[in-house]
Amino acid sequence: MARGEGAEQYAATLLTVKPMSTDIKTVKARTQRNRLSVWNKLCYAFGGAPYQITGSALGFFLQIYLLDVAQLDPFYASIILFVGRAWDAVTDPTVGFLVSRSKWTSIGRMMPWILCSTPFAVLTYFLIWYVPPFEEGKVIWYLIFYCLFQSMQTCFHVPYSALTMFISSDQKERDSATAYRMMVEVLGTVLGTAIQGQIVGGVSNCPTEIEDTNSINSSTVNTTRVSLDETKQAYLIASGVICIIYILCAAILFLGVKEQKESGRKKSEPLTFCQGLWVVGSHGPYVKLVIGFLFTSLAFMLLEGNFALFITYALGHRKDFQNILLVIMLSGTLTIPWWQWFLTRFGKKKAAYFGITWAIPFMILIVSIESNLIISYLVSVAAGVSVAAAFLLPWSMLPDVVDDFKVKNPDIHGHEALFYSFYVFFIKFASGLSLGISTLSLKFAGYVTGDCLQPESVSLTLKVLVSPVPVVLIVIGLLILRTYPIDEERRQGNRKLLQELLDSESEISELGSSV
Image 1: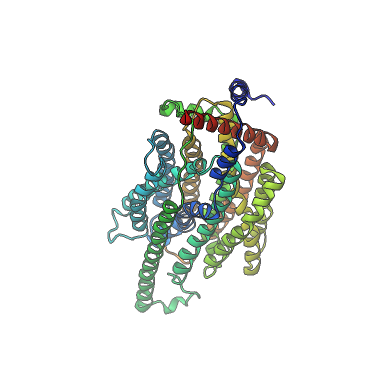
Image 2: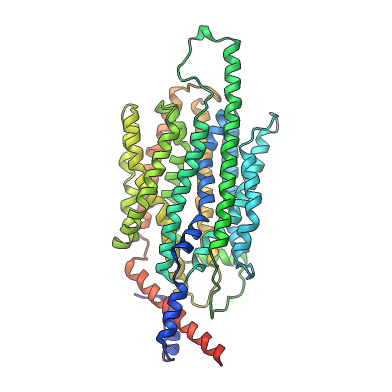
């Protein structure tokens, strides 16, 4: 398979270097250094939990919080959701660019970003879930703190994502660590859904049964006000618990993971922002992977953002919505190991086709039958299997694209963060656009803020947002992924070439130090 001029130069370099003494002990020592312990992998995996815990809480509950607790007009809620996600998207390549130009410190190149951003991320996250005691500036309040939190979260997550390439130079070890990470991240999503859902789900603004209109009096109004205040308090308690977990996970990551400096390899000259965009945008496999997963991720994000409202108003399971969300996440968590085995056995592309397609029948089923709580739970279990694949596969395939880029461009180093940050940029921007449009569509459908019952047009709109639209997006994404060129043969070839280069560079480095 042709690999371009860069690959030919790369192979020529190997042929030139390889005749040097291949000391078996040296190779074994290097392999041992690349191997990660279970403890290292777990500590690395814990670093992914804050992003998923806060992300699941915001993804599932922010929309319904802004509409029913903060009681903002759907138009303003849509602005907050779109601008916040769009701002978040813009900060990703910016932070990725800055990280790629960061100098190595005593604790690494990625770790300082992670440590410094944590306290600010925790503070701004907490203030998102606080309802200020004024009305006129409420929209500005949520907009500012939502954008600030997204910025701080980006300063944490982009370096953490790029850290995958610096915990080991062995692809198998990185894949194994990624599987640990995905398991903890899905657990984090479960935890975020459980904490937010169970604490907030215990209180409600709406009575469990609709009262007779003749019984509405001042005492009922007072009860509703007390219930709303209790709901606000519940959101604050849930956010406080999540903030504590965020800090603990960041501490575990720092104490348990050592960032490895690339041995024997000089970092190339720093790139400008436009040059960095050109580097990642001109690599074909990366573009196809990003666009394919852009559509599939958009489908699941659209489902996630509207599912709480769908369960509450379209299906009528107000008392059970937090439990249904929890079942989805638990099902996803339990199937992550199975998906890891599947992609190892049959390849990552086949896993993507099978895993993501699995959700389509159940998306159709949930809106095609009469509301039934048992069927809703069964569909949730099945949908969680596909959610697990959607979590695992993009982050498992991105390192393969970076390795392929290194094979074709052996003289360009130190820009791994750009690949991750631009991927997250496109995903988040599309997510913000989808959430903004979906929330705005609820306004046009006649959504009434704070009401316990919504018009039939709102129910119909929610059904469209969680079934037909995501199904179409998934189909488009999978068609694009068919053109993704890195199959198992090419992936294994890249792995072999990179490992040989690393072994050769290690020998040269050790020979130079002995001289």
